[in-house]
Image (cartoon, rainbow, N blue to C red; front, side, top):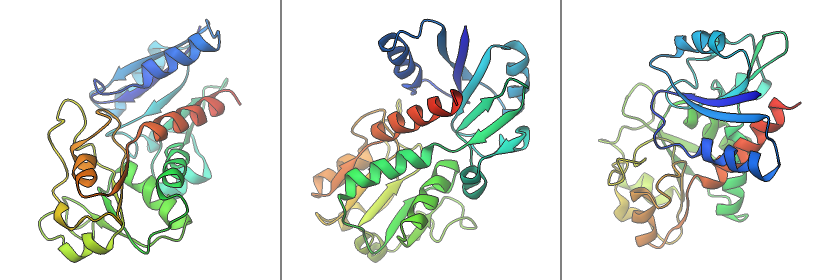
Length: 245
């Protein structure tokens, strides 16, 4: 049996296991399984690998996308540039190789959402591992961006001092935080939504629920919106390709 999985701290919101279970059923892959692995700390990954010798690869989610890097033997070029890992391949020799497939999902999502209309400026909410993949994608596309963080030392603004005019002129706003994820479905990043217009595009990396409070506020203001479901599918398929190379 070839085993795969998702590593994170809290995974009740995740659709990854259901996605891969359906993929394995559809493609007749009876020798494969995918499990959710909730770990209290990233260091427990070593214990997981010892317990699961058939674990061929795993995805990584909040809050371990950055902290897992020292445990790995090798990083792909993009993972090095981004500074975060969401996919790990375990080679036949036991080496752990880290990749970032989030960025493929972000490219696909922005292509669909923007439909060729590149904004003059973007606003990225959050500065964690997912945000780093977003920043990389925006930089590759030449889209200037500003960061909003709870920590003043890590962003251009905090949620308490974010100017309304920055929201107004940032026609692409990306939520790269877990705020609004199930079960906290009534929560949303604290930004002045009254300055969102029909010229705006709102992208939420959260996919559960499908319509987050963040996206609903944008929808009410006439903005184009997209959740993280496409990103989930694209990054999952990219991970599968890596595990089977």
